[in-house]
Each structure stands twice: as structure tokens, then as C-alpha cells.
Image (cartoon, rainbow, N blue to C red; front, side):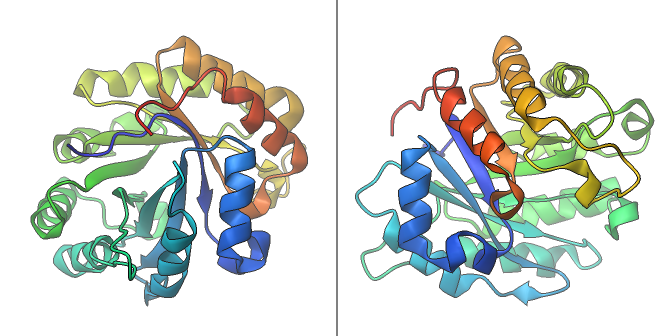
Length: 263
């Protein structure tokens, strides 16, 4: 049976800025926060497969724990088959004791991030990925949250047709987290896949300097509560290296809303 996350998780992007790249320390902190899933970047179309060593260390550090590892990758989709092969390589990575990832998470962005996201490219990529993955490894696809203008031109249906879970990137910036989260879950539910939003665990001014500072002490708990209210069984935050203490505190408290099942 393929892994469908429950509980809480966090995404790791910059390995050296995540507890100094110490895998044992990362897993220790994750367990203290009650996390069930760690999403680790293993590559991209720009950088290739560059996270294999980090992945093996993290998998080894989770041995004997209930923490699961998901490998995520940023494909450009200019060469869908090549991109699929790179992420499948992460899924085939094994430790000496045989541990491997529970799932893979393609981050399928929009043309403004450099992604060629035509429906046919998305279908070709996800089909090729599924063929190369071990049968028990699930595909947990991250997608932009479905704002009104994105619904018309983002291939949500193509993504959903070949994914086991949909993870909308519910980053609210100058919107209300309740609105972004509710709309994400409400719209994507039509595709009959679990919807497990990833929230904005960082100050939006890091991306857009002209914005007002986010009040994460209020907004992150609002994100968690809205996701729970709308039936999500798992949530996560972006990202480890950028999350301030208030975001981590909210993650610890969210563990009560999102109990991990079967770990």
C-alpha cells in the first residue's frame, strides 16, 4: 500500500541551513515537534540530482522512528522523461539497512518560475515517473494554490490524474490564510485525491520585500485550524531553514489537530 501522509511535516530546502545539515539533529528536532513527515529536496532540472548523500543520511537517522522521508524535486519539464528519471533515482536510493523514501513529491510550478507546464508535459512526466517508481512509493505533487487567475491556465486535472496526493502551496502573503487554505482544499477536492496543504512558515517579505511583515504567530495557527476544519488529514510548512520559532511552536500545537495514523 502506498504511503499517504497523516500528521504534520516540514520541507527541507537548504540542507546546510537546516540544523547545520546534521541528520541526527534534524530527526531529533522533528520528533520533538511531533512531525511525521520530512520532505527533502534531492534535485532539480537546474542542479541535477544533488541530494543523494543528504537523503541517505536522513533515511539512516530515521531508522527506528516513526518519521517518514519524502524526496522532492523541482522539474522544469522541458525534458519530462529526463526529469522523471531524476526523481525516480531518489526513490531507488537505499541505505545499508534497506531504508528508502516513502514517497516522492514533484514541485510542479508555473511558467513564471521557469516551468513548461503544458498539460501534455505534465502527463508525460508523471506517467514516466510512475513507471520508474517502486510500486509502494506514492506521488505527492505540490501545486500552486488555485487562485482565480490560475484556475484558467494551470493543469490541475492533468496533475491530479497521475498523483496520489495533492499538496497546494497555500502561501497567503497579503491574503488571509483562512481564504487561501479553504479555497485550495475546496477547489482541489473535485479531483478525488487527498488534499494536504503546505503553509507559509516564513515571512513573505523574504520573497516580496514590498509586502508588510506577516504576523506568523496568528497566521500559521489560522492555517492549521482552517485545514483541519476542511478535512485535511496532513499538513506541512515551508520551510525548515526559514521558519521562525513561532512557526515551530505552531507546528507542535498542530500535532493535536493532525494525529499521525499507522506510523
